[in-house]
Amino acid sequence: MSDEEFPFWWRRRRYFDDLFKEIEKWFEEALKEMERDFEFFPRDLVREKKVGSKTIREFGPFVYGYSITIGPDGKPIIREFGNVRPRGGIKPIEVTEEREPLVDVIEEQDKIRVIAEVPGASKEEINIEVVDGNKLKISTTGKRKYYKEVLLGADVEPDSAKATYSNGVLEVVLKKKGEAKEGKKIKIE
Image 1 (tube, rainbow, N blue to C red):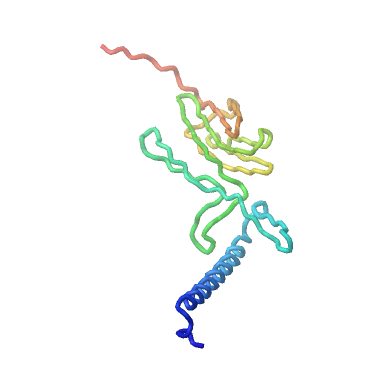
Image 2 (image 1 turned 45 degrees about the horizontal axis):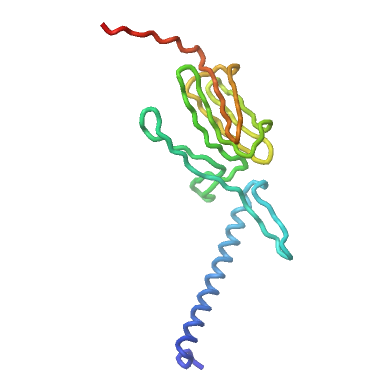
């Protein structure tokens, strides 16, 4: 029998069956290609589990985002955070084991306040270090790994650092080197 001998609805059904088979084949090929690309991920971000006779791979967590704030000069400051970095070339993304936490640096007259979001880490797992007098390095060990080097706006006194951690928020306060002198009131004549 030729296609014209079948009723219209039967021909349409066969057309859609063929179309869906092609789409399913395309998705399977795309999934295999993605699995090949994901082989360069850090081992901590790839988990396998058995479900019946099949082995299922789970990937992640993948975190990527932007933070937009308004600076003291009124211009927007855009910062990236997460553990995924877009880039050009053969591999369009770079995935690291450590997440880059969202960090705010607040410069005051005589001190610098650094606030970082490091949820899921315990106080004992957080390492904070002043490097070169004007850089703060935040890293964690344990299940959730974070890493960030923050450039401070001025040289600081490492011995003056005070840090607190509560509800996933780390706050580090550092005194600037050569404390600012007290201001002098100027009389208007």
